[in-house]
Length: 440
Image 1 (cartoon, rainbow, N blue to C red):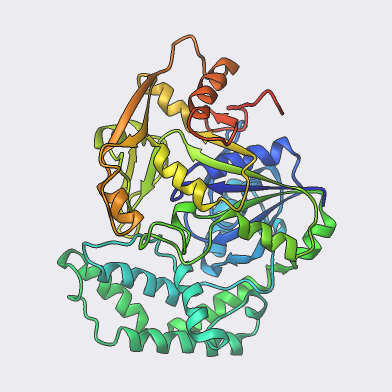
Image 2 (image 1 turned 90 degrees about the horizontal axis):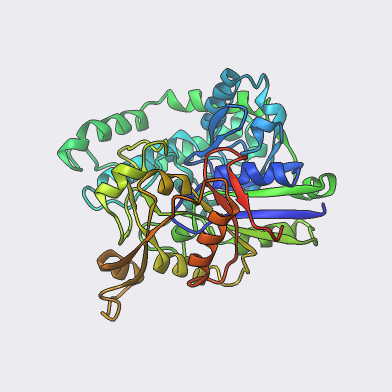
């Protein structure tokens, strides 16, 4: 392999990674997409030929026929693989699994992990942490708690006896953990959802359902190791899930994922696998702030949200909560860059600028906080209470969505605050709606 491009979200997620991964895979003629993170939220892609799809486990080059490798640091969901493959078939991809390989050591998220994930959030009542509710985080956490006795790996999916034994251990653990829970243990509005999850948890036939489904998926899943991928391909794009602000250690606790999301962990994975070539790090962020669910967001503005979100395809649900938007917050951006300081980002990709142009061409940016000198116990407390100072930049009408002058305008504004050079400005959903730096 000659070169690898790593794409990292500098926010809490929803930064526009899907479109950037798709565009980079086309620009650099990628041979493969390497996934790390979890089978959680969706990475949306819309192509210039009119196709669109929200990916979870398949990579964002799939619509162009680029295969995907699920790395050891990807937590997979067999239920999700089945559902996503069926959706891809309906889109016209006859056999999606021909475009997918998987590391044998991938942790498997099961429906029991999903039940636990949803129950945990419901039991928090009106103090949400935020979760997609698929069980990816629970799968990782339980692997640390119970080890191999309850952790299914991709290579074990075809061994029904092993799968059943581990599913039973998961079931017994969660039944004991939630033994004293009733439908009335959370908020009244959540009683039905709690009852449904408890019912599934005590369904003795659920193990058989899972074991059969896992065995079926195992017949379609081709296993390889990252070292083989590196040896047999020329160029790759690493597509990471989550965002820097949800890193399990440096993120804004408690609104964090179970995994590490900093780009240095992608590099470590690649180096251990034997790759010694160049790694190009791309940072991704929207032209404004967005947060799907709980967590600090100083610039949240309900009116701005109503104007920005049409077209974002982000559904509101009980697990993630509402979708919020607000002015671009350079303070949060600086926090994310500081958390990632062990990695030198080569470039910044700013996405969804078309929404700024479509809404009075006013680009609001938070440069500082009114109460910056107050003392707080944690960064989360600080950002929860921060009062933003916002500057509104008016984008001149003569700057069209396709002009390089627009790129320079945005570049000059950002360059006054951050030292990561802008390389891609996205002014629309497809790979053709990207303005690149003149330096590449």
